[in-house]
Amino acid sequence: MGKAFGGFAAVGAVASLYAMKKSWDPLPSVKAAGFTTLDMSAYKENELVVEKWRGKPIFVLKKTAKMVSSQTPVQAERDVMIDGSHYMIAIGLCTHLGCIPAYKPSTEDFLCACHGGQFDFSGAVTKVPPPRGLDIPPFKIDGNKLVLGEVGPEYQAMKDTGITL
Ligand code: FES
Image 1: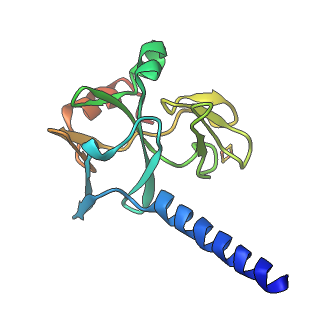
Image 2: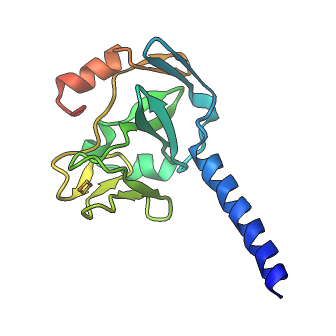
């Protein structure tokens, strides 16, 4: 009985480790000289992927058609549009004290477990204490690729309106 349980637990542990690794494995991306290039054709709707840029977690969330059609102007102005799709791109650190918020696909929002802050699927803050939405890293759109770390006109326009920080 003990052996059978041990074997069962070991299988469970391996499955959990595999699931953890899978969710943390970045999609194919190219990193060079402080830039990270993401192939945006690889992402699936409502599935948060955590990429990495200059040691920081970067949230990439491809929005569903329902998210896009239901969002407010405040949410829409944070969209990064590539090849006809809408994405939330944000630094995955809570703007309160820097914890990493968790995404819940069923409610399409983020909860920061440290002090209960919440963000919507656009990265806008919906519940304090975070003082603002998730920060948007510098990016440049290059065809169906996104180059993190370069400043393109779309990022510059967001920065000028004050929504990147
Ligand atoms: S660090 Fe996120 S709510 Fe405090």
